[in-house]
Length: 181
Length: 270
Image (tube, rainbow over the protein chains, first blue to last red):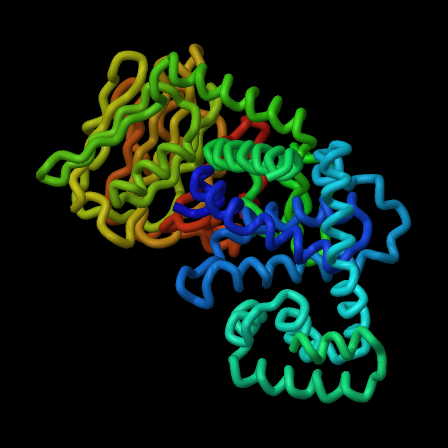
């Protein structure tokens, strides 16, 4: 049964991946409430897109990373919007004090990665996307390609270009990334 | 997992239950493609995500649980009164349909679909029916529909697979009686349409004394049953370029359901 129809299947999927989703999110945003919202958004998007999941095509992690990326980039495209409070909900309201502390710990742990992620901002979109998944989220090139819906060959080419571009940028973050990638 | 993760999981599971129940309720608007909607049916979920993903926000955990509880109450009421419909298939392929409540046309369409029958079902309030021109008359055998009979406070009918062949659709339009959803209907229209089915255009049900004039080429076959035979009068497909194509529900073989609230149809009458 599909994830959006079978609560038991969804729960199993959630438990397998919620930790990875939290890491993904806390590597990218520094506000714990936003992190909670985005985590909720990502799993709602999983329900919305459950019909697009084709088992065997790159695996469920890759599919989930694709969704997570879309949610986070949509968030950043809306970053110009003033009011965060109006209309946004769920995730942040499910945080109690202990959760807040725990989320802040995650965010702290992801700090270095976050700086690295920001360092990628100057790269062309396609190259950035691959390097981000490989260097920051520790996906294999094959998984990154599946998450992005591109061929592995394309992914390798873009990765190579991204590394080369970063070599020209002398910053601790890029050096760190080079090591990771 | 921390309590945030557990609470989020509960909220998400409630969301699944809510969505599943939503899918079983018929609506008068076509279902929005998943992932693009800005908010389904009056914002059961607060807030919006918008942007590329569309989708909805989860209601705050407490509200989400309350919504799920309300849904359960509705379902229980239905269960207590008995199922609205039942579809069975005999070993020889004859399909029997029993409808005891004129609610949930979508469920009946889905159930027929599971038995390999394409169907369009409309339940109309007292005094209203669909105009009989729904498309090209299909079905191999003539007097199809003459087997409709009263069954308690509902109706039953049966048909063989040959009477509704592959490209054809069973088109049922029921006019509820004075007792409403769970009473004997005033009128039943059952026909087989080949190819595209025109949506129901609600019209007033003619009184028995005024004869069959208002229902086109239908014949009045006795109290409350109107059947449409293949009398060779040629195709009745709509030519007006009106809203012919049926809305496709996800995964279904062209199933359409709609409830007409009696305030008139939105389609053009060409």
